Length: 468
Image (cartoon, rainbow, N blue to C red; front, side, top):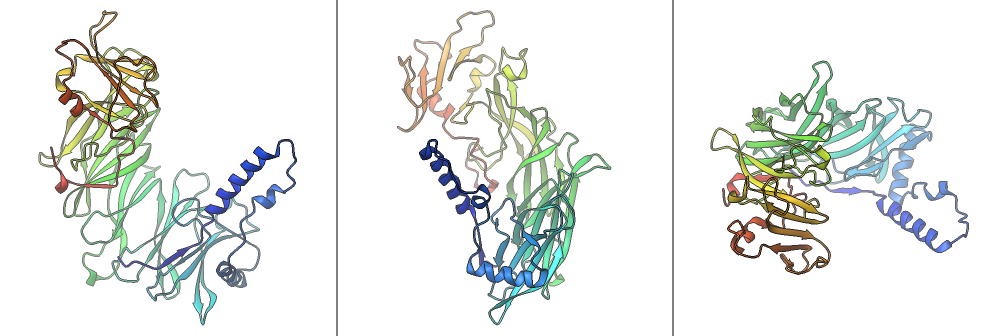
C-alpha cells in the first residue's frame, strides 16, 4: 500500500495540560476562589493558521452556523484531518461538522466536507451528509491496491441503537462517493490473504433473524486488471449466544489461510471464543461451542492469546478448582485450561495446558501432569497455596506457595524472590521429601512470569512455531 503523506491536528495535549493545571490549582489554592469561567477553560483551543484557513474556506461554503465535530476515538481526533487521498503529493482537508440549528440527537445534521488547494488557497469542493449523530472514528485504507487510491472509512454513532453506522468513501473526481454503507457492532481492519490489500472484518446483528453475523469486506475483484470493486466477500452467522465481540486475533496457517479467534461476551459475566477458518477469503466454522469462561475476584478476564510463544493461539476456559465446585461463582477459585485448534488434524480443538493465572496476570503456573486431579488451591490474602487435595483433611500438605508483593512477605521464613530482581513474585517450596513436591527443574518449567493479560497480539504465524 502506498504510504500517504498525512498530517493530523490533535488536541490531546491541551486537555491533558488543562486537567493537570486544574488539579494543581485546587491543591495550591486552599480556600482561594478560582475566578476563571469553566466555559472558557473547557472551550476548544484556538485554531492554528492552517486550521483557520481551512475553517474560513468551509464557512464560505456552509455559512457560519456550524459546529465542528471531533471524532471520539482512533488516530484522528481533530475535526480537521489532512491526508493525501488522491496521490497528487499534496494533502486534501476533511472536516466533520454539524449545523448549529440541529439538535445533537437529530439524524441528518452530521456532515463531511472535502477541501482542496488551488493556487495555495483552500476551497470546499464537496460536501455530503453522514448517517449518525456523532463521529466515532475515521481511518484511511487502500482497498483497491491501486497507488494513490485511498478510501475513507467513517463510523458514526446512531440514535437509539447499540450498533454504529459505517460508510466507506472513495475519492473520485473531487467527490466522496460511498461504495459501502451499513451497521456494525464490531469492526477491525485485517489482512486475510496475500494481495497486500486490507480487509474489513465486521460483526453485525440481524434483528429479524435474531443473531449476529460476521462479514469480510474488501476488494471483490480477483485481479488488478478487473478494476476496483468493494463489497462483501464472505459472511457467516455466529453462535446464538454471542452478545458482543470483545476482540479479534488471527493465526496464519499458510498463504491465504487463517484462523480467526473471536472473543465475545455472552452476558451475565460469561464469555466465550468462536473460531472461524478463512481460506481464500471464505469463512467456515471450527467447532468451538464449549470454549467458555468466567472471571471474578479470583481470576482475571482472559482473552485468546499465544501464551507460550509457539505460534499457535490458545483459548482460555475456566473450570472450578477441586473443592470449590459447590460454591457460588463469585466465591469459586478457577483453573484455566488452554485449548488450540490443530490444523494438522482437521482443526480439532484440543486441550494443551492446565494453569493457574494470578489475578493481576503477574504469573502463570502450568500444572504438571502428575498434579492434575490431585492438587487444589487455597487462597490466603495475596498468597496462593497449592495443596494436596484430601477432602476432610484439616491441614493438607502445602506443595508450593506463591505471593505477589512489592516486598518480602511478612512471614518471610522460606520465601525467596522468583525471577529478576525487579520481580514482585515470591515463592516458598515444600520442605521434606514429599513425593508430590516439585523439583527445581519442574518449578522453572511450570512457573512463568509472562503476563497473559498483556500477551495478546493481532497475528501469529504457524510457520514460526518452535515447540508443539
